[in-house]
Image (cartoon, rainbow, N blue to C red; front, side, top):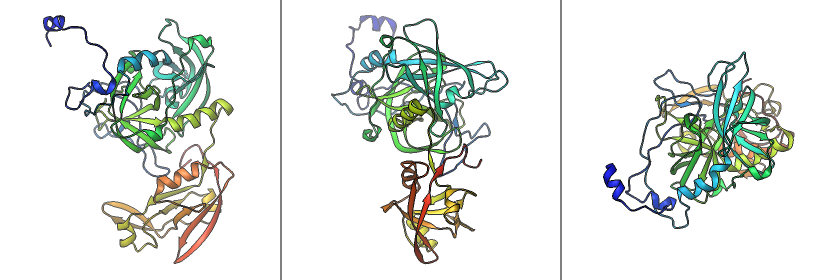
Length: 410
């Protein structure tokens, strides 16, 4: 639209979020975010060669513009302006200064500053962000939208396994705007979403899009898998990491954490947010104890498919096949067995000959993700009873779960 034409247009009232993107209407351009994808149990962070990079940690880079898909109207949605007006004051810019002799999580040399995002969750001054935003930081400070000077912050606790952290500021409760936390179990593909953060240091930038997919898996900074991740095409860039992904009611449904870039040093419209249900559990433990302890079984596994069951003559067409058992793990102590023979099916490598597991504490499951959920719902020291198929027999094996180690292989 030319400038003189725009001047002749009457002022437009704020439209609700879903009305802003009616089906077939022009849409906002999307942008960039942050870091690695994991598949299975104990998978390492994927790295690229400069042309096939899968994902990027939040740092610096150029943004590529893409067009997210349109979505249908929902009369109950707030407008982007309303969401931003309500939630913007609760989103902060985080400055992390790395150790003088090391390298910051943003790939910068020690002593340099790195920027990220976060959001207030209570009147006590607790702020949620990503672990990789404050990883290795010697000093952390926070900027609020209505303040020119940064406020010192302390790190309450971090959880590398979910790429989450909680920091705390000492300011009057009246200066804090906690964001309401939603329910990530209620999120559906196609739901409109808004991201607020600090891309490239541009404080409290708002962008909008939709939920592109659910139940994605990404890799945490320590190499373990993060499950139930929300995929979005909302424009998120380097510096958005740790900021909120909000639904049309203005409730936080995830923490923006990573992007998939396909070799481009910037965004191609594929971002990932750690689900808010995970955030609630992790943040509460960090505030209470300063740490999170995850239960650990100690196997690498593959989900059994009907094709694999048929071609490999497995005893069942559902459940998981144990590929390897970690030495010294609870699984090894319980006598679980990994595979010994390599086979290829449909381009995928399988390690055959190991135990097949179909139930945990009497609960049937169909794949690796569900068994991982069952394990993570327990605490270290809990006993997990497994239904195991081995050499034509069905066995019951009890495993005392341990504490998740620092890395999948360390």
